[in-house]
Each structure stands twice: as structure tokens, then as C-alpha cells.
Length: 339
Image (cartoon, rainbow, N blue to C red; front, side, top):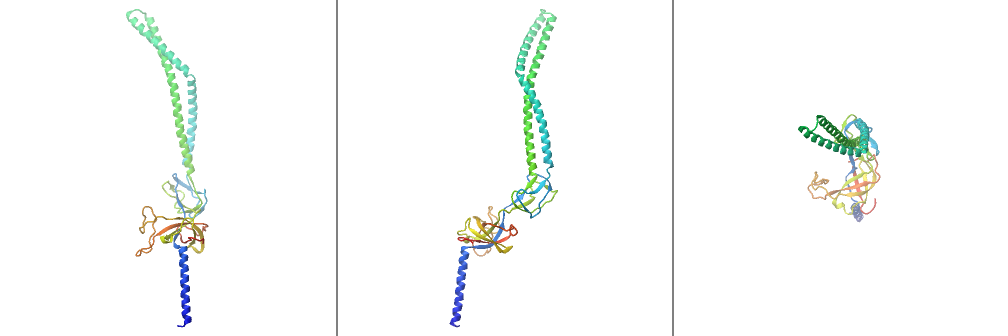
């Protein structure tokens, strides 16, 4: 082999080593992984009340805006409850007015009624004493039958007037009690009306945020209940990529560190982002969940390899057509320099 060829081979080896060194240095500065997937917050849309679904203006996988109607439950039972409660409330208000007038009138005459009762009691006791005295004298023949009859009549009349005055006092007390009972009943009806009004509002289920409908698994006529999810809503306001990095790659990776994202659906496009959080706990067992920790399966079981931890990256300007929950992605994290 000529000296020229030897030099050429040496030069190629040197260039290869330099390139390999640069690549390794770059990888060390900006670790990447294809063990990543797209993530967004989701909620199960579950009604607060129960009833038959009468309207579903959205379709599966449709984009919706905050406040858009997702579906509606038959409002008639709750409208009827409001109407019934309102009518009952009006009746109670009239009854309270009438009862209050009676109370006001009786309270106005309360002093007179009380004084009348005291006077009637005194008259009755006096008439009773006279009657008992004459009754004793009658047995001895000291009074005439006419005098006895007059005393008995006076006693009976005084007793009747005393009972009547006591009845007036009891009626005044009863009227006050009846008003209190009506007022308490009115409070119960007001609570029932407020509950029915709230349930009527709950009959229209609206989107709590901008998002995309998915897993729509029902139709008009279905009986919905608070225990059953009608659909799932993906929060499209914020998209993330959860990338599983080896623990040896996590040095100097912290919140706010810039990142670059490639989506498998179109690897020709890249998206900027930043680290939102770094996982601080995973299950050490493969394929399981321990104490609620995320499980990241090891790719090589016969060699002791570095554990991988999830790094949550927030995407700055995601493209709606490409970002789907669970889609595969490639993530690059830049420790020191921006991409």
C-alpha cells in the first residue's frame, strides 16, 4: 500500500473520529428520545343531574369553544318543579299575610284581652265564692230558692265569660304559632325552588374550556345519570409531550429548559417547547403501577440499564391537525443553548 493511500485512510479515520466526537458531544449537550407521546389534559363530561338527553349539537372529534352546548337533558321536570314551587310560594305568602293581619289585630288588643281575662277571673272567683256560701246556707234553710238560683246563674255566667277570655288569649298565641309555621314552610319551599332552578341550569352541559370532543358514546333519548360519562373533552389550549429520558440524560434538565419536538405524523416539521416538569418518581417494576407512580418499562431486561423518567414538555405553537393525544413524538432537550 502506497504512502498516499495510507495517508488517505488515516485521514478518513481521523475525520470519522472527529465527527463521532462531535456527535457524542452534541448528544451529551442535547439528549433526545423517541420514547415520547403527545399529551393533553382531558375530562370526562358527566351530568350533575339525571334525565333523558334531548339535544346533542356536537359530533365526535369536533372542536368546541368554551361555553358551547355539548348536550341537553330534558328540562321539563325541573321547569315543572319551579312552577309548582312558585305557585306554592304565592299561596303561602297570602296565608302569611292573612295570618299576620290576625296576629297584628290580636296583638293590638293583647293588653285589653289580658286585662279582660284578669277581670273575668276575679268575677268568676267572686261568683263561685258567693255560690258556695249560699249553697251551704240553703241546706240550713237560711236562703230562698230564688236567691240560690240567682247565685248559681251568676256563677255560671262568670265562668262562661272567664272561659271566653281565656280562649281569646289562647287564640292570640295560636295565631302567632301558625305564622311561624307558615314562615318556616315558606323557607323550605324557597330552598326547593332554588334547587330546581340550579338543576334547570345543570340541564344544559356546556364546554368548560376550548377543546375537542372525543369518545362520544351516546345519542338522543339516552337516559343520562351522574355516574355515567357521556363524552370526553380534550383541553386543546395546552399541548404537552411526555418524553421518557434516561436518568443519565437528566443532568441540568429543569423547568424552563428549551426543547424541540418532532411529531411522527410529520417528522418534517418541528415545534419549539420548554420543559414543564421533570418526573421524580416511577415504578421500579416493569409493566405495573406502584403507589400511583408512573411505570416506564425497561427496554433491555438482561442488562442493568439506566431507568427512564418522564419529562413533561409544553409545546409553544402546536399545529391542531397534527397533535393527537397518545401520538408518538421525538423530543430533544437543550441543556445549555437554545435550539
